[in-house]
Amino acid sequence: MLSLFKRYRMARTPNQHVHPFTFMTLCERVKPMSQVEFEFAQQSLEFSSDWLYQHQANGCYSDAGHMVVQNKNAAGFQDSLYQHLAARSLPVVLSNCHETLLNALPVMALDDQEVGLINIGHRFDLKQTLDLQLGSVFHFALTRYSNTRLFCLGIDETLQANQVVEYAEDLGVNWLTLSECSFRFRNNLKAQLASYIEHCDQLVISIDLASLVSTMGVDENHALDNQMVLRTLRQCVLSGKVKLIQLVGAKDKLIYSRQTKEIFDELFALSPEITHVA
Image (cartoon, rainbow, N blue to C red; front, side, top):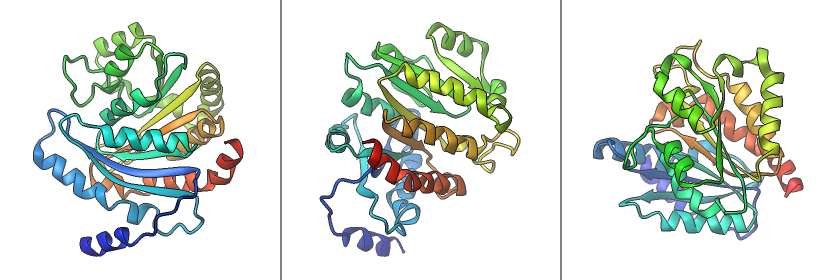
């Protein structure tokens, strides 16, 4: 079956037409990830596009393929991002870890642009480490790039240590809790998101798929409402400021979940409006 998928991908005819979205998958090994975990994630990601969007026939996307970042060499990924951003095609990256975002920021974090990071998930990912580790992405993003700010949506307070919350406050992070991102508080979420967007020149969205799928150790009452995630995504994309969308999942149950498919379907539905905004 994998060989069939590989032949299908290789047989695709390159299209030079500029599309509203450019999809790509990326796998990166970050401490303390084992080699086995890295290889399993790569196997899951490499052919995920054949399930997520191979049946779309409206020509609203281009496929940048699968990439691997090893030994901190992300030049190929960064070149691809630069190329598609220059062509006004919004990159959508399905990655095995949040830290992939740090490879993208040098391409878009210009000194005269205020970059708003939006993290949709249960955790702050502000682990304070000297070297890059899983869970440290926004610690490094905010400390390396003075023109970035962070808005976290869906924080599960039961998972946060007091010192992490204090560190988030020290960094000026804004956030809404899991309950505050429910349908009941949709108007407040929309208003706060609108205010955040207004103060940013560019937006980068990161979505933690594990926070959406109840089967991944998250019970149904603690999973983020995917309809609220879609509403948030739509509001951000229609602002015309989004420069990158990152979806993070390293296992089949996340990558091939209903929630992930709904996110891609929402992006396809937004394509005509994206073209108009651009």
